Image 1: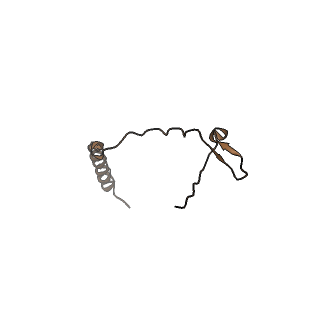
Image 2: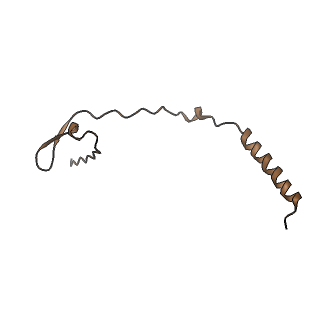
Image 3: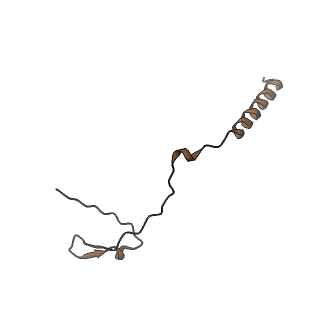
Length: 74
């Protein structure tokens, strides 16, 4: 059986620990040299032929997810 004194001691230790954590200084983010987030810019208007030879423009696909693969051999 756990004694009441042990429970009270543990509770006091817990309160002191939480007070120590709460009093800790906030981190200094200025040393990280963080840059503000810039929202993405829209892609320029362009068109490419699809597998059937028809030209598809980016405007035709507005609102859809577009994944482009460019393959080149040099």
